[in-house]
Amino acid sequence: MAKDSLTVIDNRSDRRFEVPIENGAIRATDLQQIRVTPDGPGLVSYDPAFMNTASCKSRITYIDGDAGVLLYRGYPIEQLAERSTFLETAYLIVKGELPTAEHLRQWTHNITLHTIVHENIKNFMDGFRYDAHPMGMLVATVGALSTFYPDAKQIHDATSRRIQTHRLLAKMPTIAAFAHRHSMGMPYAYPDNDLSYPGNFLNMMFKITELKYRPNPTLEHALDVLFILHADHEQNCSTNAMRSIGSSQVDPFSALAGACAALYGPLHTASTRTSTRAGRSSSGSRRRSST
Image (cartoon, rainbow, N blue to C red; front, side, top):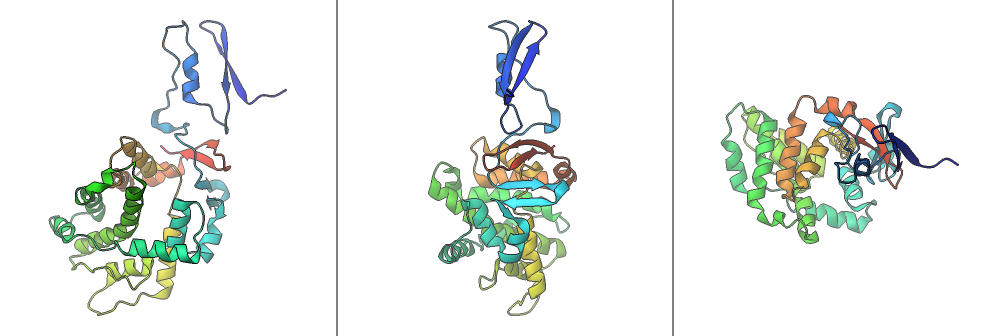
């Protein structure tokens, strides 16, 4: 009868070892049992650039680029793009299920509450050269947030983690828009919390002299869909960087700065395309680890 295992014959010692197969993958630590002598070093796997290694299992995303399939928590991306907003999708990714009307109202309120950045952040960004690249500014400014919110270091506290999630979702559009405005030589446009999440981003990017910016509904919806499509892409280069940095138990702002630096690299998109198949999670999602 077939077994979900791999039998390895060590030709050095003529010993046989059985390694379990789970979700189409073996655990690298199971190779440690393969050794020539009882007190000798166990076998390790060598995989430069993570070409065929899964570093985690996902209960969030299933992606099969060749088949054009992308699922968040089991929901098809087409359904989310047509019927949900980015903030609803963000709630789904973070919480595991789509929000009720009341939960969405509270979630939106908690995020909108944090869209403003400290004035010293604006002054910090003013210190960059007039021709500084917006991504370089983003990397530095996100890292600087850790000095403004020292409570973010309380990573084992559920309340603190929740607050940092709200802050990051709220402040990233503000910082990104400010970086764009700086590169264009334009004054910063402050958040307008009367607008939707994508509408507010358009406001901060493109407002000029009008007292009240009115986003184009078509562009507003298109941007919302774009945010949904990029909300989570499994274990791509920047995600892997954030997980690796976060494993040191640093605050999320510092970890995200590293992820932004990985995103800044010209091969980030290529590494996502060349990600390799690994196992399946308990929810049936395939995991891919990028180069």
